[in-house]
Length: 292
Image (cartoon, rainbow, N blue to C red; front, top):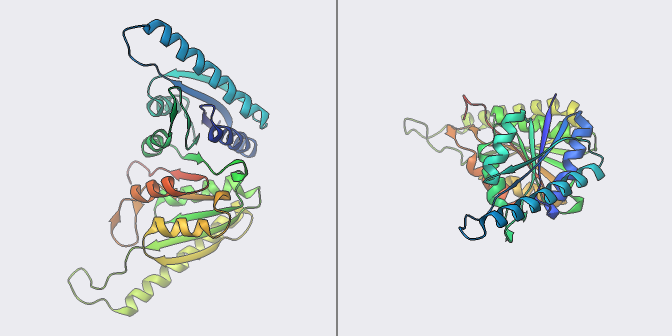
C-alpha cells in the first residue's frame, strides 16, 4: 500500500497541501497519513505549563489538518502528533510508515509566532528518501493546469517526471519537458577547439532523447508534452517556463541532483532555487542512493 504523509500546521498553505494530498490519494488509491510536529521552549520557569499548552495547540492543529483533508474528500488512515524539530520528526515518521510521498505547504504559522516554513520544507526536501510535493500559489494552485518537467538525464529527474504525470494526468494538465545545458564547451578535454559539428550532433541527440521522453510521458499525462532544449542556467529557464502561463497553477517537477549532460553536476542548487522562487507547487524527487 502506497502511503502519503501530509505535514500540517494549520496555515493557508497547509490547507492547500491537505487538498492536494486528498486528491493524490483519490487518484492513486494511496493511504493518507497526517502529521503535526510540535515543540516547546526550553525554559526552567513554567516548563510543565508551557509543554502542556504547546501540546494542546499541536493537537488542535493536527485535528484541523485532518478536517481539511477530510473536507477535501480524503480518508485519513492515521494521524500522528510528534514532538521535536519539525523536519527531523516528519522525516523520521515518513521512514517509519514507509511513505511514498510527503506533501507539505511552503510556509505557515508555526506554534511560536509567525515563521517561514521554507526552512522546514527545504530541510525535508534535501533529506527525504521519497518525493516531496511542496504546495504554494493560493487556492487555485491545485490541481495544476501545466507541468514543467525539468530533465537532466538523471534517474531522479525521470522519476519526478513520471510521478508528476501520474498526479496531474487525470486533470488534463498540459506538459513541457525542458532540458537546459550549461554553457556549451568551446574546447574539449585536451584544450582543442570543439568541432561545431560535434556540438550540433550532441544537441540533436539530446533533442531526440527529449522527444522520446515526451512520448513515454504521454500515456501517464494523457497528452503529448512539448519539448524544449535550451542553453543556460537550468533553474532560471525552468522558472521562466513556469511564468509563461499561470505560474501559480504550474507544477515544476525536478530531481534533487543527477548526472548532467556535460560532466557531473549537483542539481541540489537547481532544486533549491526552484523551491525558493517558484510561484506554484514544486515536486522534487530524490536521487537513488548510488547516484546521490
